[in-house]
Length: 573
Image 1 (cartoon, rainbow, N blue to C red):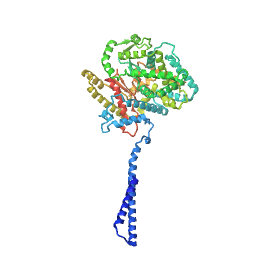
Image 2 (tube, rainbow, N blue to C red; image 1 turned 60 degrees about the vertical axis):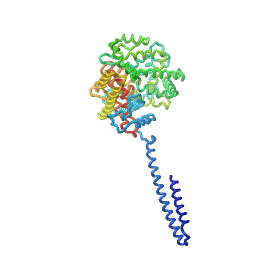
Image 3 (cartoon, one colour; image 1 turned 120 degrees about the vertical axis):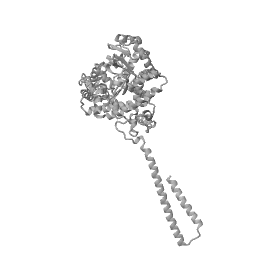
Image 4 (tube, rainbow, N blue to C red; image 1 turned 30 degrees about the horizontal axis):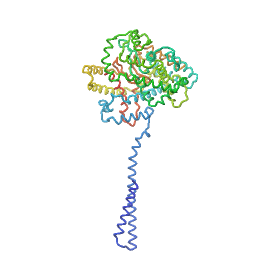
């Protein structure tokens, strides 16, 4: 551009000079000298104007380029609670490009955020994982810097320090490994060795879920609403997200399996080929279980139509009837423990689950469960493995994840009340109210649902309870719930096991239901619908600052939160 301007200016001057020289008569020496002086002044003036014009154009070009460079991701300034991953930035941009900033945040939520919240967006799971990680970081900082007023919070602080102190203790590593292997053997998982007993995988899964609150493909919880009930819930969001990310690159999956297998001394028994086969089996099982999720449109209708038949068929099932029913579908003796009365949530679910588990060999499934246990709890003993790529697995956040699984509700309740005001709760509640309003509109538009069913669903949505802000009465109950938890044990893994046993003793109690009602950031879904209680349990971690780029509008912070709530609310339909 500058060269063109200079060239045009010089050409203009040259043409003027030629025109003048051809049109003027011959002059004497003094006149010629005077004329040349005027021409030189004219050339200087034109050149000065040309240079000034070029400078102005150059400045304009620079000013136009500055905003483009300023919007580049490379120059963003990130805070510690704002994600820097490419996936997070992509999700933030997706929401930013589809939302309408002119719409009202609360009254026109679906228009503002893009209006597609009823679908299975990756936004929900990504926000879930990011919120979960942010909450664990916040909890760890809180425990390191504050003593806490709850007994449970103080015990969680001791447990965290116990884990951190044993990171570099080789003797503790070996002792923790022995304890961990004993735990697996007692659960029927002598992994990576071949199981010698005849314990059915479904028995192992029920034991892990009911007694230890460790959910793999599904979770089971005890309810006290009139009758004691066991209810199946869908696959945890974190597990589904993790598997999708891992199996995008199969080679990386095998590397992960081999790393954790070697960490517990199972590297010799596990070849890469076998690890790949176990990984493939787990993916197959996960995809199969995802098909029976409550969000499946066909099963949403089945929940409404079949539930009455199930209650009529089995209004109160004793433990012996429960075991007989499971034996009929699974063909094995199960050890579910002698709860007095159990109400089956969905006959359809039990039939499908029984068929799926019989589809795979028992030893094959136990191998997959054992692999998951190793991957899930390899950091319980803070195993020292020289591998920079996996350093994050043994970070303080990993220790905090274990602490949160035992003391999460108490720590989060105290931290939220100290740092977050009711204004934060109101902001989140406004989002939930807006989504609930959109749910009413959605039900009215459903063509497959009859008028009577629509009235029932709308009545249910009106009566929906939302549990996400700690109350003073809950504090007293929470203090009592943690009164039987252990003092610090010599090994962190032993502390974890004792705390798990204490939590198991709360099954079927009011305090246990309180802890079950408040999701923890480590394991449970951050937003979960309770079918029996017609309530949505929301982790208090959602009140923390969500984790999107600060260069986008502030309303984007709660976009994923609303998506997660809407996905949970669909289960009420």
